[in-house]
Amino acid sequence: MHPTRRHLLTAASAAVLVALLPGCAQTPEKKFEPVVGQAGKDVIWVPTPDEVVQRMLDMAEVKPGERVVDLGSGDGKIAIAAARRGARARGIEYNPDMVALSRRNAREAGVQVDFRQGDIFKEDFREADVVTLYLLPTLNERLRPILLDMKPGTRVTSHQFRMGDWMPDRTDELASREAHLWIVPAKVAGKWNLRVADAQPVPLELSQRYQNVEGHAQVEGNRVPLEQAKLRGSAIRFDLPAGNIGALRFEGTVDPAGRMQGTVTSPAGQRRPFTATRS
Ligand SMILES: C[S@@+](CC[C@H](N)C(=O)[O-])C[C@H]1O[C@@H](n2cnc3c(N)ncnc32)[C@H](O)[C@@H]1O
Image (cartoon, rainbow, N blue to C red; front, side, top):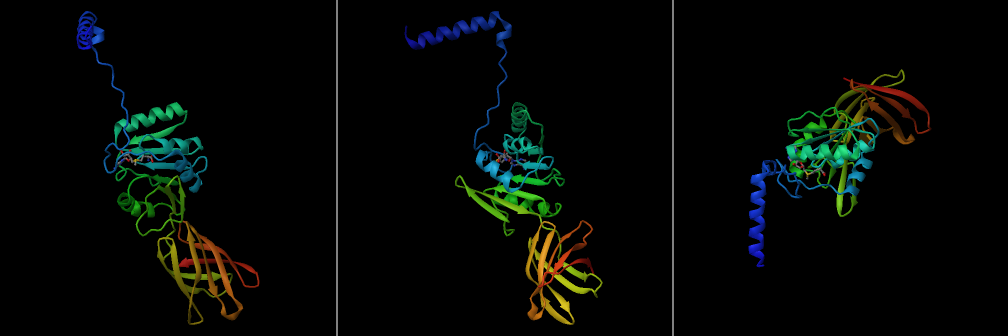
């Protein structure tokens, strides 16, 4: 039989069947199939390769119980991988079909993940310890002020894209991609009074651009620039040159109330506690 004729006959017999059995007339529910490159609200969907997902979570040192949020969570793979490490994982995704898919994927993986439909620029994720991104440079820059306002020490990791002039603390290259890590720095710019044990306070002034810090102290009327100043989350350290005997090394943390405390080590290795308060 001619193939077209056989096809028509098959279609005709199918039509008869549908007429006889009303249940057959219902169209089966169409399963959503994501397509790499499909449109998204602000960026298309392209999944991060598994190897890069693992590296991002390694770089961020995700620990069990920590809150991890993937912004623009797609099929959910980053949040699911974080949940497999014991994290309290969350995903925010605009496309409701992708949200449903990611919930199915989490169920199949046997992990609990809070996938929510929403816009990453409207949802509140400030409680997170780790934020993961695979968006676009412009979107990362739009998120930057929100990220910089998160608690010091929050880790932000991005597949491929940077964050404008906020330089990453670390970049790894793998699988022809880049993975970046930023650690949200404490806010330290301004004037401080530095006290070592019972000695008179020394005025200290710090300026800051993201995690980069510079400053000087007023020691006996002299302006002494700090050296080797470093800020990593709420951990700060700097050297205060002390004439020809070397430098005093200050290592401490900035607490949520904005107080600095730690230990100062003399060139001879003697250690004393120090504090600094805003003046
Ligand atoms: C490049 S994909 C990354 C998916 C996933 N994070 C990964 O790395 O495998 C970006 C995702 O962000 C979603 N998206 C785009 N704009 C968004 C917005 N304003 N709010 C929430 N999700 C958004 C897209 O639908 C897409 O699933």
